[in-house]
Structure formats: C-alpha cells, structure tokens
Image (tube, rainbow, N blue to C red):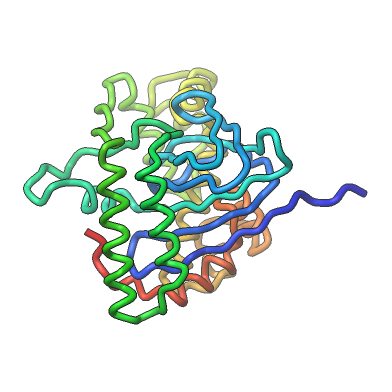
Length: 284
C-alpha cells in the first residue's frame, strides 16, 4: 500500500484582521484552485512547478511566489520529493490599505505582476516578517509593533512588483454577473440553464467561456466559493459543523476535504490559529 505524500501545514496567527500566514512542507500535488485573497511568500526549500493565470511557471528556493484573488493555480514538487514554503494571505481591502498612498484612489484592484519573482531584498523582508510572526506573543503590544514594522518593510519591497489590474472588458461583464450570482446563491445555486439564459449564451458556450475566464467550470468555482465563505465564518467563531451546514457542504467531513485541498490546512487548524489571533490591529 502506497504511503500518503508528506504534508505538514501550520497556520501562523497574526495581529491583523484580514491577514493570515501559513507555512507548508509538502510533497502533495495541489489541484487547480483559487483564493479570495492576495498571496505572496517565499519558497524556502526545494522547487515547484505550477500553472497560473499568467502561464506555467517554475520556482526555486529563494524565489518569491504569489497569486492574486480569483487566480486559478495548482502546484507540484519539481526535481525533489517535496518543497517547503511560507505565505502571507491578504484580503483585497487590506492590500489596498497597505500599498496605496493615503491620498490615492483606492477603488481599483491591485495585482502582483508575476507569479514568481527573483528579488533577494523582498525575500529577506518576508523571511524577517515570518520570523516576527512566529516569535510574537499574542496580545503583546511591543511584539505587535515589531510585526507592524516588519509588514511595512515587506510590503514596501513588494510595491515595486504591484500594478493596478486591468479593467473588466465589456465582453466579460455577463460572465462576472454569472459569477456574482453563484456567489450569492451558495445554498441553492442556479442551474446551468438559468446561468446560460442570464448570460445570453447556450449552456455549452457558458461552460467554455466561464472555464476560460475563471480557470475552472462553474460547479468547481462554486465549491471553492463555499470553502472561502466557510473560512470567513470559522474566523468569526462559528463551529465547524455549523459553518459546513451554512455554506452548503454535506457534512463537516466534506468541508474538511475541500478546505484541505484548497488552503493546504484543515478547518480545525484554521480555527485554532484564529483563536490565538486577536486581529485588532490595523495593518495599513
């Protein structure tokens, strides 16, 4: 009987609302998935090959890796059995607060320009940030300020690799409305026929165009959206079984399988980290 691939994940509490961190040491092949957050971090050991919304990429130890909200990506080890990396995940509103000047228009979306970045200064700043988070004592004001400073240095270095995302093209508006309807109806989603009628397309046309725009078909996108909503509810203190029921999962086990596949850690690990993370500091 084959052994399961090595997979170790730890969620790092942070002192900020809307930001969480995790470290992973994994031989697992992650299937195509997306996050509602910006993600950026450091590949500490090994190498990784992945598909992203910006093409197939390879990353090696010391590289900075990233994804932006809604970007479908996957990941697998390259040249060795496993790889080890640390990531910071930032909600879009927090990202704007961190990177936009105080007098700037914050209405637009931001995107990190490349999924793999060779920038030793940024990588060093991120390592220092993760070290601060790992050593911080929950609720300690001095440690919280040290984390604030490390976050400011890291995001300053990151700003050289960030740009405003392009505006949505007219041809994508109907697909965006379809996506928004799916997100609004997690428990009683519309049928493919209803979505196609809304978009003015045949069911097959909708299926192909949605998958081309979002990287996965509507049913897979809906399942990932349910996981993101469950993550939000657990962060607010809802019990795991209640979060599963509230987001349309068959049971807590079903939520656990999807959660692990999408985020790399279990709902229980997420709940435990949120219990240690007061999330009262403003990151910007």
